[in-house]
Length: 123
Image (cartoon, rainbow, N blue to C red; front, side):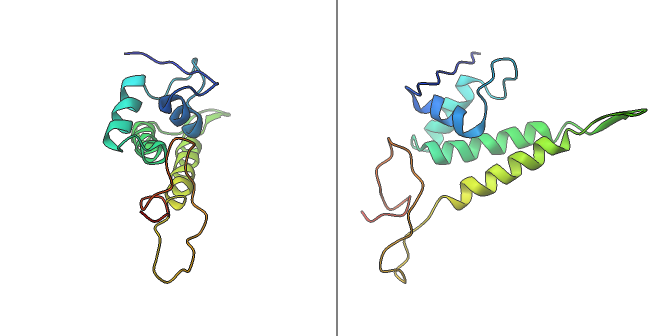
């Protein structure tokens, strides 16, 4: 399996890595193949793939526990809280147009995703 990141964001995989914070080669969270799978499962939506990626990261991190030896403490649960917060933020960025609105609220979408019925726009 491979891990790569290009900060010039030439691919959707790199955009997902930036959004989920998996940009440090010394602290790799997901492999390229995993992110590409999430993109495939999300019809290449960076936002939806990021939600799937963060969910997978939370699942990985829940296996870890806080540790304390004497005065030294490692609070790994803080990472889980961070990713749960990120997941909530990503989910709140997905809007669906409602007939009650004359104009839908401004949605979050990436440069490669057209404004459509899945991210707050019309067809």
